[in-house]
Length: 117
Length: 113
Image 1 (cartoon, chains in turn green, red):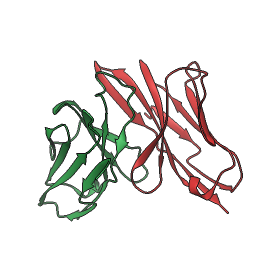
Image 2: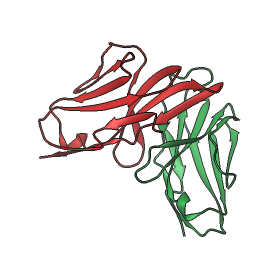
Image 3: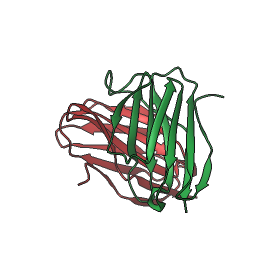
Image 4: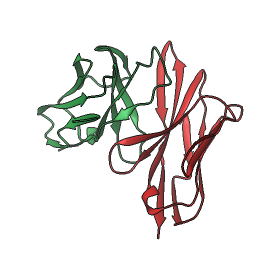
């Protein structure tokens, strides 16, 4: 595996379900990100992790809970989601975290298409 | 309010045409502007611009930043059907003591044979 991988690629869940999205990067990067991409809306940055430490949380509802056990893996735990949370969730990584260098190129994974019924 | 505005939102051209995509922004403490190409799912990086007037070029694609007028353009010459994609512009800036990154809504480019 190379680059940034995400699983599952598609997920359908009910509002009472609990599920997790997984992201793994094989690039040796130190920073990882979660983004949400909804139809007809700009890509939204949700969370930023630097060396496993969360550095940014852009006013994301608590029903989204990130976890970063090491610098290569990132999870997004989902519980009691709403239909409006249906979107494409993208993971990305960069060599350095934004706090050290905001000029980093980010490498994106293929995304998880989430549908909440 | 939108901090990053891209125009046009969609564009249809014929192969061989030249296109110019626009990205204007309104932020304080600007750090960088990035262009991405999104074909199916994952956006792929094209350019990062930090200084005014310096053109970045990669094959048929080029981009330039104007920090005085707060905009950037992405040019694609001799377009091909493989250029069909959504082109995303993003701006990084410092705000409230933390790092911020905001994307525009994107320009959907369709190149027809």
